[in-house]
Amino acid sequence: MTWHKAADIVDLATKEVVGVEVNGQEIAIYKLDGVYYATSNICTHQFAFMSEGYLENGCIECPLHQGIFDIKTGAVVDGPPEQSLKTFLVKIEGDAILVEMAD
Image 1 (spheres, rainbow, N blue to C red):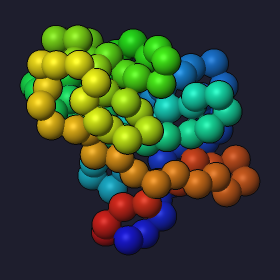
Image 2: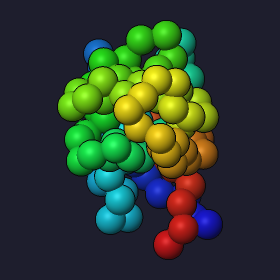
Image 3: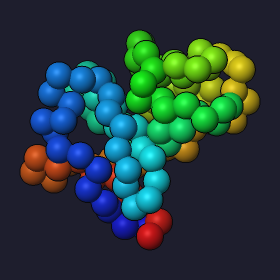
């Protein structure tokens, strides 16, 4: 596992979620109460970018079929998805947001 730069803190200064590509994977980076989280940016139900969804109460709602996922755990909170989102460890170094993933 390796730490990869995903975004800069400034990228989430006025947004709660951004979509980025890291090491060939689509990742959603979230800022919730000053803490950063990362999940796969692709819904597990059908292809939709989670970063285009609605973030509320620590959950992201898919913009396509309104599946709801917990951003901390990736768990499905409400269907139609049945599979959780993949989550990634996040750390901050200076002004950079890093995510841990396989090379």
